[in-house]
Length: 301
Image 1 (tube, rainbow, N blue to C red):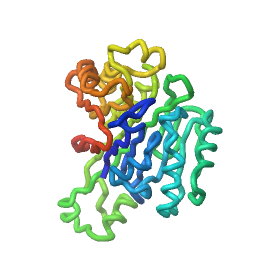
Image 2: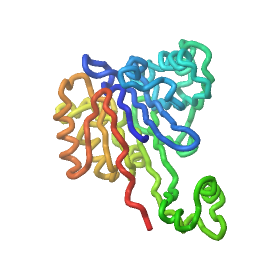
Image 3: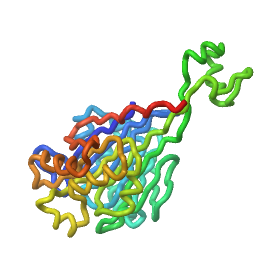
């Protein structure tokens, strides 16, 4: 299963219908399924319950920056993980300049979780397949990009024709050749998938780098054309700018979020984004939405 579970979509102020930020990316893969929680704002623990997602599904937590609507839900989430008996280590990634804030928030959580603090002070790979790139906001902020390496998908008919089954399949995958049969003979190329998380930022090269060619782009869309001057003042994206980013990047699916509380109806923001990206697949997120990653691109032969 690969999907984005939207836990909250409001920016600075939650509303009656929109919680503060919170996004869980469910990412299947060996040796287990990862659940990467991005920017847990206030109320995230409760939103997990509403979404039917157990806290035990979280394997990694990523903070883009230390504004409250992106991190004040952290103590509750960590405490819930302790209560639910999470035994494995959990990685927590965040900008190094937020060290004091992170330690204060972590200090409020119930002890008992093996939490590994992983600050980053610059762009680059911070874990296998997970990169950060600096964004342009009022404090140190990073976006995240998750990248799956290209690989190969087995073709059952080719395996059967080659007489390979059971444990020998795994052996062939590990060793690349078995009894004269090469892995390439019984498989096709598989493109890796990618996801970008672009939160609070003005237009910048970092946002372009993160979004380039991804399968799923989660991007802030705080303001509309009617308040574009506020976006410029507070270093946020307008809906049109988010749409333009989607168009330039070639993102296959774009999800808008982080809406100002002034917009009770975000349909006009979605229209502005789509107008800036004709033909692009763009949606406006609602709390508790589940957005599947688009199907893999056609196999290369």
